[in-house]
Image (cartoon, rainbow, N blue to C red; front, side):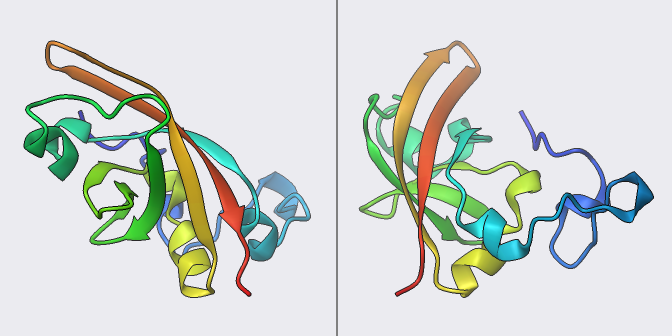
Length: 128
């Protein structure tokens, strides 16, 4: 159960990730910050929520928010970390610093043996 980034340094902030031919698709950092996204959380079984709730997954519809800790994480409104976001979403750190917030909810969750899957949807809330 580890990170599912591309395995490239381009997943990390400060690196440039350009498409062949130098075209970045015409999107700016602000465009990325304002997008809604769906994600499968990583390392769920190692995070606060799973441990403190007796190895139970959060229920579908559980309200989540994005925060920056050592990694970018999804957490409950009470601050319990549910899981890490994949490294390809590390650009969200800059968005959070710029005042964006992200509100979402658990779309589905399942714990089968050692495999824990939590999927969530998030919407961007621009800075005021």
